[in-house]
Length: 401
Image (cartoon, rainbow, N blue to C red; front, side, top):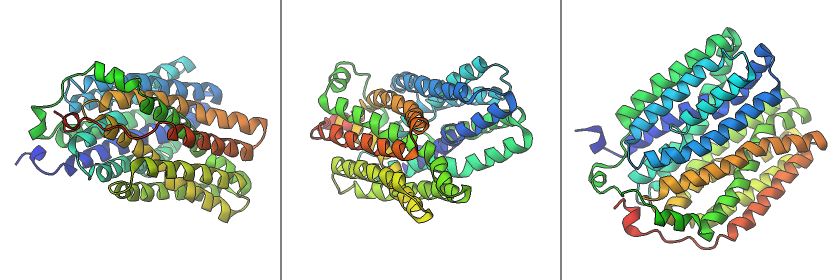
């Protein structure tokens, strides 16, 4: 029996592993690369931060190209190409001698990473799970993102510490390619066999109509604020807690946040099988705002860890809920391109959130920065409410026909 004729959970396993590797060597390792490049090449942290912002923006834009490609090309080959580009840029960034080399290689990494991250990963899950189990499958698959940070980032930091960044990076690039390509070729299938022949053709007018809808515009705007403040808080949590206590408690706070985010995401995937998804999203937005406010006012080890736990409970859920909302509102056929546009928009928040909180810290302190993030999340709550009721996706489109 062929693999594609077995359980769709094989596809979930493949997506989990691809996201684990792409996020481990990408998102979660960015600060590790930045510190090493600053130390070994004497690049300014501000210049390296600009390269990271460029990577996010390029990744968002190229994600829209990836979404169009997946309408015409098997997702496996998109992942293979993305892994090759991302792996090559990773392998060579350690040899960069000028800051413009880093910017160029980070831009290339953004292009490659868009082919092995959330857009192809969530598209696969939405195609293979048309029923109530979709949220559970997506929660399991997207947990690979957090797992990559927990498993790969400490290992990569240790390797760079012992070998130096120039010697370490070729191993990282090669490892990413060697791991992802077999997974993509063996475990990933674009469509279930029974749906492949009736996969929806490229669409144009329905896409334009959905893009201009109040629901899409408002939920996307809300997510720019939600993910911008979320990533900003994650980026500054360690420094904030360390200044209150010490590096041990700060490390524990980050671990608590990451661990609780995994638990919260897995529980959330089950909850939304029976609980209204928009109401659950609003509960998580409110929880994120509350957690950030708690972190802002934390003045001890206990209160800092409690705030990190409340915040972490919402982190995984909010990332998982965005693709679920898009596919439930507009259907599987239109999902890749619509989610790619939403994802491109939210990269503006992801790129700007850490910078904004850093500037607020420099001008005031971390309490003001985290309170501003909490307030911005509160604004996102009302923007999300303004989106209105969940549209009903066309049944035929949702089933991939």
